[in-house]
Length: 329
Ligand SMILES: NC(=O)c1ccc[n+]([C@@H]2O[C@H](COP(=O)([O-])OP(=O)(O)OC[C@H]3O[C@@H](n4cnc5c(N)ncnc54)[C@H](OP(=O)(O)O)[C@@H]3O)[C@@H](O)[C@H]2O)c1
Image (cartoon, rainbow, N blue to C red; front, side):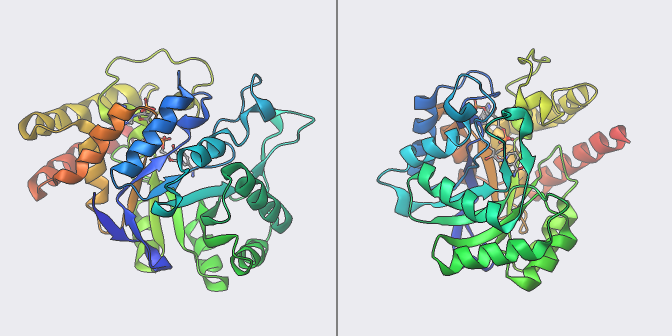
């Protein structure tokens, strides 16, 4: 495993971290909870030192208690029994729903009282004494940012969290909050099929803020495992949250996969490893969160750190990505 210094937090973080949206078992195809727990433990055994989760991972299944709210957090707590001290746990706050109204009432809410209550609820589900990094999941576009600083400051003083961060926030809001109370890290989407946040990640990294990327495998398309347009079940995250498996993107991305195939064949590596190295070889990307629910994918993805892409290979990939983006405009 390779490690990087993670923002201003004085931690080393593995360049691959574990994503757990899949673990919740809702809207990611057929996910077996026991095998997903095995996958998390497998990542920790291979040196992964950061686990990313959230209360909403697993939410939305009417057959589950509390519609699955907090499901992934509970499984993370289970997976980390006995190895808690080897990893940093990241969870999120600021998304909740009305128990009387059900999943459709899910909404963003970053008021201080919601952050404080959300943190305590997450600690209970994780069955832990503290959270290493608590992120506000999405900006709610109405609560003054001061409320975030106030709530996070209290949680830091009470020892409930070690650091706080922001996910999906505009760069100017990250910088405003950073002045009020230093931001530990940001989490944004970034991969070979989505470079929208590249400048922002670079700028925030330069300010000493840690950077985590999500969708690092383009929700699976960059692994090359799915080459014909899949027929996901309605509500599947890979078509509701991401657009890589929808036309016209799906067909366009196949051209990029062909370039990746060439490197994969000549180097004897996998496409997922190429996607991981393409992002984590950049100095402004500290860790690429990779969502996995199967042990065989863990082995394959973690082996990315056994080798690196050459400057020529990186240039070839960047040209293919430029072509993909030109075709989008
Ligand atoms: N802050 C936010 O708003 C936000 C938003 C989205 C995601 N996230 C976080 O980021 C994590 C990663 O993002 P993501 O999970 O959405 O997308 P991702 O990591 O780009 O892709 C995950 C998908 O890739 C598949 N996969 C992984 N390795 C593979 C391999 N070697 N071969 C074939 N398929 C493979 C997984 O399948 P299997 O499950 O079958 O292994 C899963 O379907 C999430 O789990 C979550 O923790 C945060």
